[in-house]
Image (cartoon, rainbow, N blue to C red):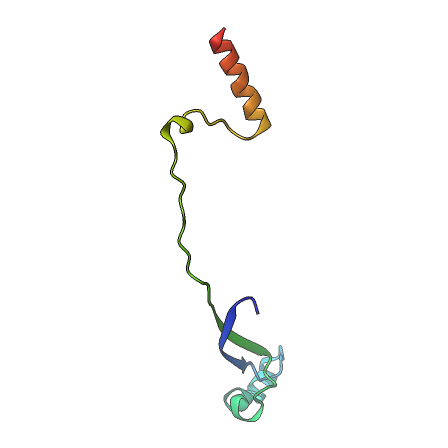
Length: 91
């Protein structure tokens, strides 16, 4: 999906989410044995993927130097300001 190739994935965090440290210590045995005995019952799933994007060549336009000096901004506000400035300069 979206051009990704899945490389690997794995589960982690097999111990129940206790807040009490005594209970966490009691269920600490689940972490090392989780990959073997509870492989799909982990609390977190890590996924590693690579996006494949085809290469491209950018085609840049050849600007005419005479045209570059005559270009004006595309925004209406700046067009009004520039046109007013050119009118006052020509008068």
